[in-house]
Length: 463
Ligand code: HEM
Figure 1 (cartoon, protein in one colour):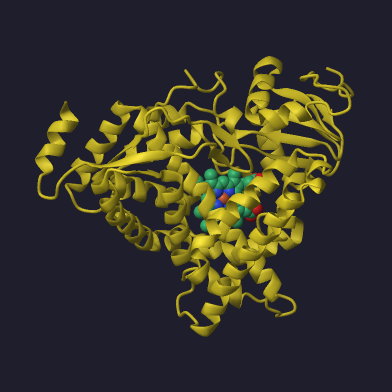
Figure 2 (spheres, rainbow, N blue to C red):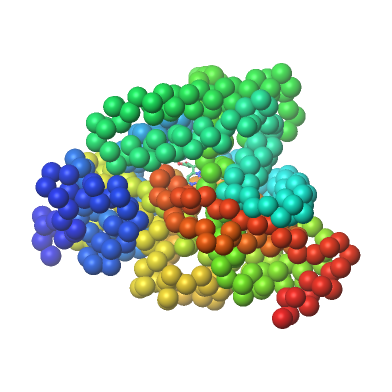
């Protein structure tokens, strides 16, 4: 194969290439290209060019082995404009310094110590749901999950709450997410004319900034003796100069954790509830595991190892609906991918949504089958085809945190409730920065058991 050649790929239209198609249906376009062109497919998207890569060896090369040759792609520049230059968006030495400061807060031991906070928040949500269940009304589960994961991030990592800004932050994040998600694939022309949208975006950024300042100021007023993430960020000193982070840098990092920590995990949970509502056999098996292992008491960190199916359900939900559905890198110098030269400045697209559904690695890929994640079947699968948290040095720092939080909350809530999608509601995945349900996820919350009547649950499960 000649190195100078560009691999085949979808043709698109003159000048804009695949931009219109990618704007319309990004996951569908990447999926069809992978099916038709194989391991490496050429894409021209507006003024940018690059390759969609779906071979685990190439993905490993870009994200891990040759990670130094890559920066995050233009999407992150847009994100940087919204939240600032922090752990998620920065590069090279500056990124490494910020990562080293935050890393100790995410060591397994420390995260497991935070499980009590997560379990408590899940129990509070379960208690609040009782009234909703009694009323028999539907609620949007994505809102419920967002509130839950925000509470967890705030209490576990930032040691506080958002005070008067709590109710405004959801809407602000929807606006920011939509703005960045849409503008990534745009040419920057259309959005300039959308003044109203630009104003909304600025207002949303202000809400976020005020909320974050509130968290930091509260901590300054009441210093904590716990070495949580916020105190690590506030106390960290530069090894050479001894200087602390500036207020602005601190604000950026707190914003990063607030956003990165709530949005993705809440979506993983939302899709989990949706899938369970569509697959009664899996839901029954989950309930059986929870009832047998916990015998009616609320789950704690120590129970997680005995709830493997609960974890498999979460893993499988993130396979079908990876909250971070796709990301990309920009080559700093020429590289070779799948036998083709990738010129410097070009992009490599890594799309977990596509990788997670490739028939070469997943039998019957569209089926919801948590058993795929049994230890035996997982061992048969190559690495780098299941990437909900990315891979390599830029892998998600909150990986363990999110998995413990998800497993604990699914066990706590499924122990008491069964969630049913509002009949006839249209569910569609909406790939912005994250993979949201486009029309929300309205569900009925049904109580599974009246306290003290556990035998009912057992007999239902056995039907
Ligand atoms: C199910 C939940 C989550 C998913 C699916 C997820 C996914 C990801 C992915 C795919 C990346 C890498 C992006 C890339 O390489 O371009 C990432 C990075 C990151 N995530 Fe998560 N994440 C989750 C939860 C969390 C939580 C709970 C936190 C913090 C509390 C967090 C904080 C971060 C940060 C700070 C980064 C940037 C790390 C770096 O570049 O050094 N995430 N996440």
